[in-house]
Amino acid sequence: MKNSPNISSFEALPFYRGTSERHSDSAPFIGAVRRDRTPRNSDVRAHEAADQWMFNKFGLKFRSAAIFVTSDLSSAARYAHTPQHVSRIVPLGDYRFCWSPLVADMLSIPEFLYFESEQKLFSALDRFQYQCDDLSSANQSGNEVMLSCEHYIGMPIASLGISPSLRGSLIIPQEP
Image (cartoon, rainbow, N blue to C red; front, side, top):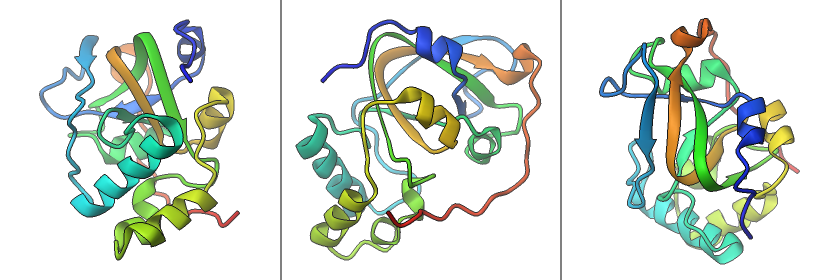
């Protein structure tokens, strides 16, 4: 299943990403999505198991072949080099996305964070209703969205006249 190559939904619905210092905090840039992403904040075994589950369910290893975006500015800012290193993201060309209406960030799933077995993680992921549709609801949720595309435009929020909200929030997945 492929999401529409029409980027109007990402143009109309704002999604943000915290970026590193190598990206400009004042000028738009074109970024490339790596296909071999390795985890920075999680167990490699959990990352690989989640990738396998996603490949089995959706035909794509979203954990290693996507960038992570959210409509929640404060969530994006937590992953940014500085609060100014948050950019609005719009994919260029074909894209696919995956998200859960019940999980703000996969790092908050105990079976992912405290990985014990593939079976336990698979069971948890099944419960949390991951899906590859309904971008509008994904935007309204403020949850993590895994966006897979070749390239994307990053527009630093300062260049759009937006200030990041740095209010912290506790991320706890909701049981279905």
